Image (cartoon, rainbow, N blue to C red; front, side, top):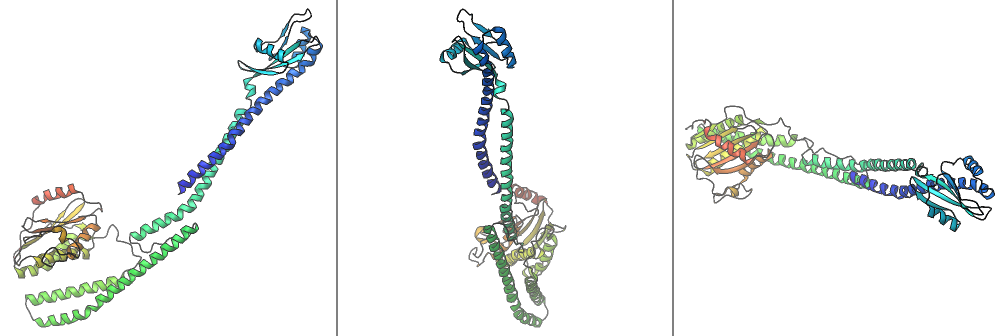
Length: 462
């Protein structure tokens, strides 16, 4: 918008300046020409009285010298009454032009090399017609024209620049509020819910700013209501959880009882976390910065330690590889733990007891890959398995767990893929981009080629 206003002002002012400057420049040139020929006419008129009295050569030379134009004036007197033709000064005009003026009896101008000449007829006492020739150089015809045109050009350029500057300032007053509105919308889209737009500028932009701020307030209020609803619903779960925890106390001792009590305690912790997060979240809190994240290897070891107890009960062999060194990823610890629990829970839920499984962590320069594989029957339709709210087959799966994992990977610029594992079953690969860029297919292939060469931990048996 700003440059559009500048271009319009530039075009309009340029046309106006040209409309006035071009005719004015032509008038100035004609005025300079008229001034030069008027001076020539005055010089010719100064010689005319002497010609009407005498035709003596010496006297005429003195008259021409007194007029101050002896270098640019010539007098042509025809022969008559026994007197020879007399020529004074340098003749520049052609003979036929002089004869035409003598015949017509009126002044005339004609072009000559270096300028023009004024031919003025004068009647002699003998009745003959003499012609006074006054030379007008081209420099005298254009004297002052260049300076006047330069002044006009300077004034025109100043007017154009001034109009452009004024239009630019007006454009800034209009564009700045629009830019702030765009920046506010971008910040709101990025999750900074405290973004607001100053209500200033033209009337239309002020109204747009008012509408934007009202919309942002509504979004904040809706999110606050949603958090309160989540907190209230989670709080209602505490009552049945308390009953369940009390019932687990009567189960006695044994692996199953301990596992049940551990699961109930973890569920209570998760519910408490949901309530606390929903209550303490601030609407204006920005997204996590570049330094936020967790150690993927530590999370993998922790979750495998939890699931290993159930694996021993079901006679499953399992292994972990690549989790012996820290692996930083830009993912919250709770999110990665939830994703691993979803994948490992699918292994226990959809594969027979005794089926082996493994978790591998591959650390590349710009990405981290977490592989969860099993030796089960596999997934016949991976695309349907990842579809949210739609089962992958006759096993009743909803696909919600895989959708959670997919969203986690895509939040970093990575992706989720399902394929066949080296164990003979399903392999779920979580590609986590550590620099926020979209994953390159070539990088996928390179990392997979390096995979067989990595040392893997031996399978652990129950």
